[in-house]
Image 1 (cartoon, rainbow, N blue to C red):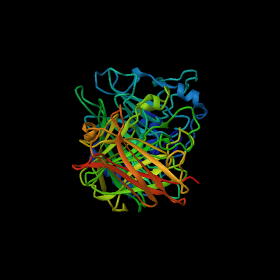
Image 2 (cartoon, rainbow, N blue to C red):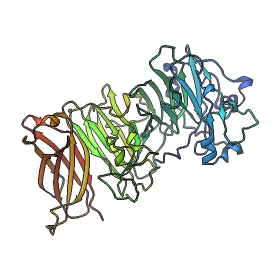
Image 3 (cartoon, one colour):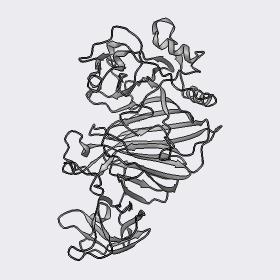
Length: 519
């Protein structure tokens, strides 16, 4: 869950031709002797590779010491290392994409294997010091093939900003039109939010297909491995206003898995307008995402604002064949963050759209306490109702979109702000404690309603008493505001649900919240 401390590992591919793990690793380090260059590659081959791997006992990545000059890199020295743009894979070929590699060091101490695929033949991509500008760090004298920590993809003519990258376990990130990174995705999440350490599957090797000169997408493949599962992944990526990834995850479990997370998204929420529990900062808000959005199989739109919970908590939103879910950064007003360095107002949203029948299950939201904005503390994923176990082959296909507004809610207003404060009327506080909830909605049919239109707030709570729910337009703004008081005693969490409707039906998405009384 710590974004800067995810370790990478490399396991040699046991079924890569006739090469054993030890021989393949040795060949990588001595590429001029007997490296297994030019091996046939196909998706069917990769699937069989993952299938065979799952039939074997899990072999941890070799924990081999890095050279001292790499192991001793501090934060500044590591950040100063830059890949030389002219050395990028496919640079100078007039192709629509280029790949630049990340150097090992600091928190990224274990290499992944990289291959370029041309006309169905895979060639290893070898490390050499000449690929990097080491800044003030002395460049190594030896030409040892260290491997790489990961890679980023660029597209001409803008070669100053990468479009997406893979770095750390099965983590990857992408940008939209703002070219600003934010939340991350993962290949797979296992046992997240359970009362024991979660398992982090890792992408052990990548195969990057060389694009044609007129290609509008880049296709790459990855082999995933962990103690519980092996997997074969294919990513077909298109870039533009949004970065869109068509993903196929083919999983081969080694053993029963208690909680599997499909299409997991990982983000950070420290505090915002609805939750200021740890807001000792000059900035009004700090978060990569401010809410979980759901489009259910029943065609209901749901918005769940995120919370920096004082305890680890997991919420499950049960569904059948969901139409989509994602972690969104809806609030894009700079004045709400006042941070021109982190640029939280430009952070992308990520939207998962299942392809095919995903059946029954639940979107699960895990919220973990954090006092530091460098820690990812939010995870959302699909947990299928049918458990994964050994001997199975399970396939999940989905479309993952990155950008400012990756979802479309025709006719449905969005919940754009949630605020919470003392209940009652100033000067007339009641003896029973109450909290006031204020939700602002915008867009959809609400935007065309007259100020005197009959709009009804529909509010429900799992316990306590909801008092005086009301809805009205906010003069001088495009917003409609719903507010109500909640009277409850005790320290147990309260689940809340709210939406606005008129005589034609729902005007807004459904706002969900889980409020935990302080203390």
